[in-house]
Image 1 (tube, helix red, strand yellow):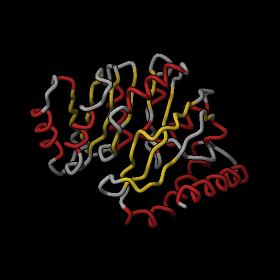
Image 2 (tube, helix red, strand yellow):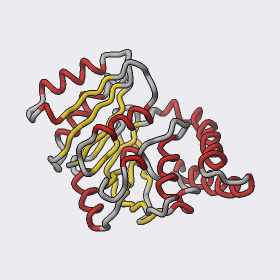
Image 3 (tube, helix red, strand yellow):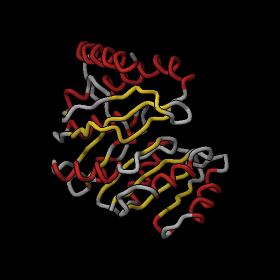
Image 4 (spheres, rainbow, N blue to C red):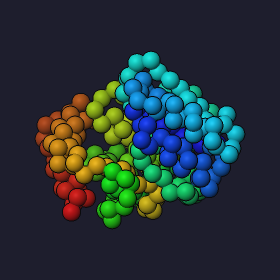
Length: 251
């Protein structure tokens, strides 16, 4: 079984669509874990309404409600802890999966006897309409190469908990917690395997792009210094590689 972990915070505009999208997956052996991080909108009401309308067993969807907002990393960790499936997939509430995403990724995971897999993805606009900008992924990614290319997108990953512990999947409470998690895993010697098929659309509002560039640069620099614990010179070298690849992805 695949446990799909979705952090939810004020996702009322998207969450019904997200639940319907999971229901339409061609791989049917899944559970959906929605961790509401103290939303102030109608997210929980929409979740309950969507569950009521489902044509499958509603017990396959688990809503965990938190009284205090603690961030996406903490919400994902809660979902990982309650997951019952052998496989764990992360999905952000506003991203979009292709109907065959789980089926293709599970097949790929088994073919490579992999603990950690990820896929190519495409940028979408605020309505998840394709922009034509695709991020391709390498067939394999180790720790050293991951430091200079943040190519793993959270909503594309899948873990096999018979080959990697849940503890390793837990995300730290730091900015860019997802990248910090991938680096921590890969640093142990695990290799991530990339499936170069677009199975996810990353919903990203156009208005956020320019303002996020400087913040992203600061976050990645802090990861080099505080998570990877690299010296200034090594951090600068990896940062240069990251900046070049990040620029090329936007061209």
